[in-house]
Image (cartoon, one colour):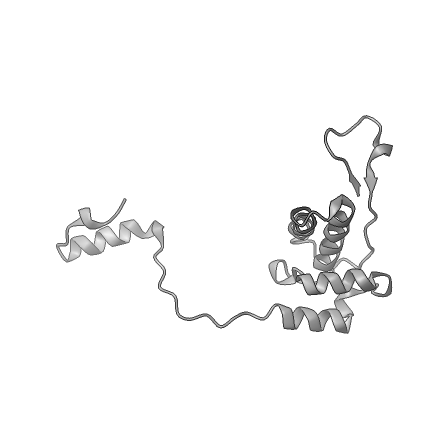
Length: 141
């Protein structure tokens, strides 16, 4: 991956070259989103472009080596572990430690019941109000 700050020059040799990692591709869905999440992680934490690109490449590699899209996204714990052992993990999809980390760091919290109002249901609310002779002016626009 080549990275440039500012305008991309005519001579590409001046860019920062950060090599990716090789993985077996099982699914390409989410690769770009994962890549950008890694890049943004490094960028917003002021870790420099080289580290940001390492995160980006590793996030993309982890996602394409798994089935799924959003459920395949790595957590910080997974990404840090993978980067620490990347030369010893040719197949992230079958690495027991990564699979364990993914399982235990992506558990969903049990949420309380939510009462949610869908803003695109105005027509149904108007219909219900008319049925019971309620003032439809009380329904916000």
